[in-house]
Image (cartoon, rainbow, N blue to C red; front, top):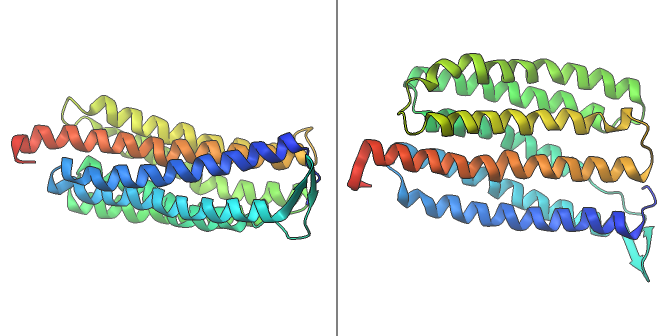
Length: 251
């Protein structure tokens, strides 16, 4: 483990703690919010809450692992001898990233065939992206990280293309009062997902040692907050507005 300053250790520690609390709160908000939407959109909110619930669990484990990897005495941070387990993050992504795409597809209420087709294609591509990225994440040399990062970028580009080309045409079929929200959810997904490769490439920069460790952990944490809790709130807003338009006072 890299030697950290007290400020660096505290920054990551507090980021993990804040994210755990946010994901847990978002889970309660989304699941309790199911009573505010019509039957067609309850599954989308259930999955959105499941995403944040899985993330909350893994951030709790990540927090514990970070706390166990270092000992702090008198403001001095030293490695405890226990390795920080970053695999929790990839296990989380393997479960949640496909679900993030599926919740967006479900809230658009496409035809059954289109929903199933896009869910399998995008969910499968998302899982492949995570699996290919992990060997590079744990690699100790830059060439290996570049190789697996490049391979992981192939399904990533496909997903981004589908979000804009594949789902773009479907936005015009949405009720007028939610089209802008759907576009914002799609753009927020694109922006947050685009941030992950940037963080992945931090080791390629002039940064080294503890700066890389802190940059990667805080960067991924920010991206997770936006992609899961942030997009989840937008999914809720879309579901509420569509329910009002389609079900009226029957919700």
